[in-house]
Image (cartoon, rainbow, N blue to C red; front, side, top):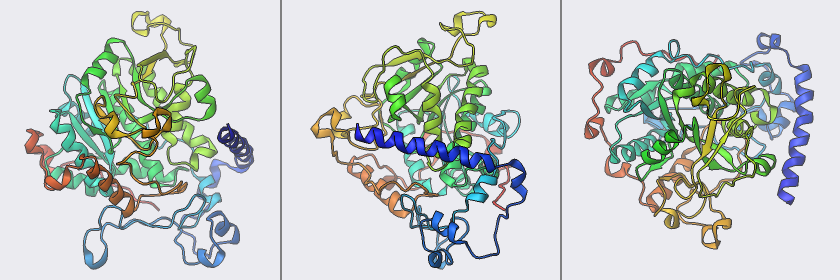
Length: 466
């Protein structure tokens, strides 16, 4: 209860700041605020960054990211990223006026005929039974995404592709004969928005990419790169399709008001979307993104897509809440699109458009919390982030969990310790397969993409900051 009161108090204080900030912001400020200052930082900017003015004098204006480290060698995952993040502190200068001057609208539409035309084309090439499995990653995540691919292929799935958030990862995956779309240009377009951290931009851009695939008429299983498939997930997806569900998500933590009503938050890092209601789903995805662009508090958090989906899923007709640990399949009607009529939307006329149907997968099959050794017998995926004593004392501090480094609220990119800790945790669980196949190639799974894919013709070009 104490934790809940603290959360509510913080939220109320934040709402007051929202209104204060929004009163002074105007789109016309976008061109009036300098991108790369030539002046020294101010005392306020130093305080906002959680450092002294003396420390701020030696800090960069933006977070840095290097591909090559000492002696021209390739950096290990995360090695070339800026370090020193704390809860309310960061190793680069925070300029509130600059962030407030950035746009609060998405930089492009999820249009499969425009920015995402080549993604849609590649997805149609790899799809099986109209289903595409997709995960986003960048060069730092190259080993993690390779581990994801190996596990996907071990289960016989060949309909997976990677949404590569930089050209370096895309080139590496293409060399390996693995389906990848170079999405770096679409990601860089977010530099003009108030989402000024790399993690934020990746998490929101991938939502639009999934929406574009849905708009193209494809069903999508979207996963974090850290999802490890250990059993066949298709029976669960087919059951959702048979129940005419439009979206099914992994359970997650949620704010107290959502917990009281719905009982669980949404993890968009494991989300199944059926394209049958693309007309309503694409606006839903855009609204989920917009929540992170207009709500001040979410700008300070890197999981803005989680908040966006969680709050929109909370607009439902559940009479009693479920929970983040429930082993039931929970299905409900959303109050989306606005003015929709409850019931089965697929059996109603176009004149009486039905509400979207959404749901949560059972926790024991798609666990987010608890002890992997105890959940492995029933789990179809490994995607556990922490223990939970509510499942029993043996689940409180389970083995094989990546050690927490505390809430680094302003993190731009993960560093080498984050990646090393994750790999070590997966080795403990016997789930890290990259050591055995560091040069894994798509030919091992009989992936055939054609000569035009390997030629790299008409690849999109990246736009960099500034």
